[in-house]
Picture 1 (tube, rainbow, N blue to C red):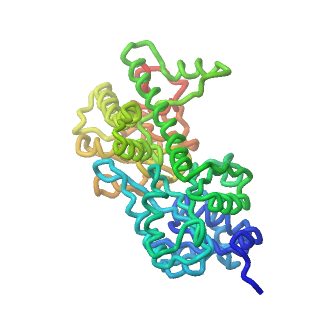
Picture 2 (cartoon, rainbow, N blue to C red; picture 1 turned 90 degrees about the vertical axis):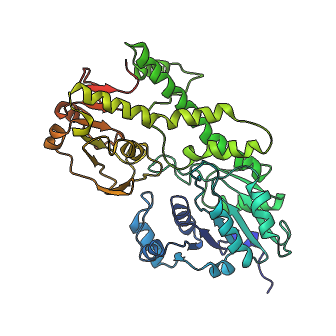
Length: 438
């Protein structure tokens, strides 16, 4: 009997799915395809992570260990550090990190390494999807040449597409199933196969004309957020400078307009992976075309300056209680980059701690989701949040407004609070120093 086509194997769920990179994108993706009826093999070079997954232990907050354990037990998910398992896959999805270098240039070394390992084992009738956030033309000008170097041709022997991840850690409303997925293939058949694949686990799949359109779509989504957050961060500082102005009240009032306005909020800085990285990936690529994304780069710089601004607010707070910084004990509430998650990637809270370490006598932190962190190479453990701790701290900084915190209780017992999230709404006195309020 003739071997089924790749399309038939995808539609019948007989296709073996490989996921390269089992982090915040890769592991949830593996679970969704396994729940959808596919057999999934995850490839990751972190041996500890692989052992944990094979034991049914999830290291990702959005993936429940009991769900993962059931899928592993039923043989739907296995994890390995061995790229040789690529030869058994019909579909490969690359979900590796794409960080910045210290000089804020794209670091696509993980994409390159994964692609080179695939190329060594490339076989016909294989669909490859790049999902890692990157600059436009990565799929066609970086990944494709590596894959074709041994003579196999895209659209004929194998298939290649880009499909940006849309993972929002901690979001219970918009999941992988009900969040539309964008796919752009190198050829028409590449796109059709990618669409067919994602229709199994997603309600809506949006095909676009090329990988570069899909790549730029991802950048636009996050740069849109970066620019608008920068706008309100700048306005927050202006409101403070003008005096008797509260940016939070301004935003609340503007939000009553039923059209043409979308609320964004100031804060101590931006975190996570994409929104920090995307502006620099695009601006780096733009220079290749003698184009300078001044507006976008300015927004990124504005947001990156916010932790330094917050440090100034902490020093101001210490002056209110007449404690020299060198003798001060500062308590930071929240280490994650946003509320109710354990994700600390590029967290502004940690950046602030890095900046004030050495300037103050003692730093402690509490985060119900983050047990320990590294700050300038030093280890910190989350401490219990008690009335005594609040009273004995010279300044309390609310960096992340986890819903488990009781802001009014915090405000009552702290000597002085720097509130970067507008968490304490009903205490209005000199004891609470709010971001964006003069």
